Image 1 (spheres, rainbow, N blue to C red):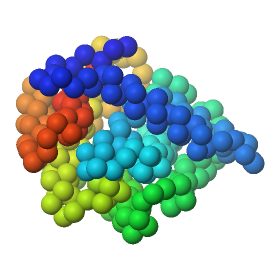
Image 2 (tube, protein in one colour):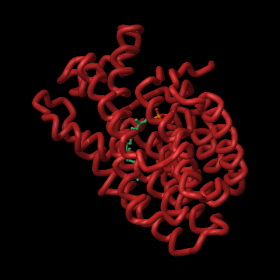
Image 3 (tube, helix red, strand yellow):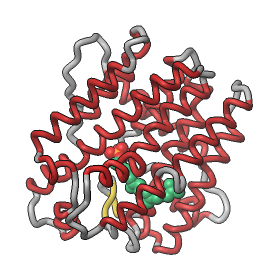
Image 4 (spheres, protein in one colour):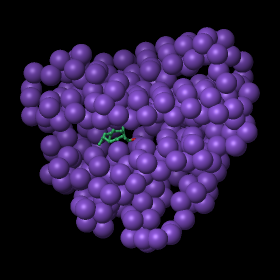
Length: 303
Ligand code: GRG
């Protein structure tokens, strides 16, 4: 459906998101054809082309064009962000982790292809993300691509997503999780990749130190706000369909910002982070309107 957003600029975010989603999905489809052995390519494509908002590649493309780069320069990098995101979802859904049956309105990868193939599809996607950046990027000085690869590799591994997931798993079932631990989990598990989208888009465009610092501040703030809103949506959707699935009940018992602060205070905090993110863009003109609108969308989104 159409995305309702209150806007103080003329920027049409709903139209922009829809356009970027199509562009990214065309690129993903084209970059990952089914070859041999078909089983693994089918499993990879099943999750990669299963929908999703495509916010990560959109952030990457928007940052690259803000700094004078083109969408074409950043497209393989933008796709790599979605590829990593997708593999993290496949592995997160596995029986050994969250044990989820549904994702993006479809059966999870392991439910369709089996646990063995789902693990391998995740592994293959992880490798493919870096292959894409290294072999498909055109018209960009190689040292920029190398910096972007290094940043994304760090953000994906123990210093980022994997590290956040580890602390999340170790916190499971504990009632005495502190705000600091929760913030560590979120800044790594969710924040690191969102930040990488912005930073890698900037690196591809040839950003200098000043740009990188401002954009990193923007990205860190939207990353945390995104997770707070995710936790709020998890509760409100659980209340709507109370008792529907055991998985949702479990999620409701987890320590989250709303469980520590309440929903209203969590909303206030998320809004404060978004204001801070937009303040970090003060140096930029209307060219940064997509990033401003994306930040607002992060707190106003309904799914
Ligand atoms: C990255 C090497 C590597 C391994 C993965 C399993 C794991 C390690 C990390 C877990 C990461 C995880 C599942 C984070 C949650 C991210 C999150 C908030 C997802 C929801 O994102 P949306 O709303 O989803 O953008 P769509 O479906 O729209 O893309």
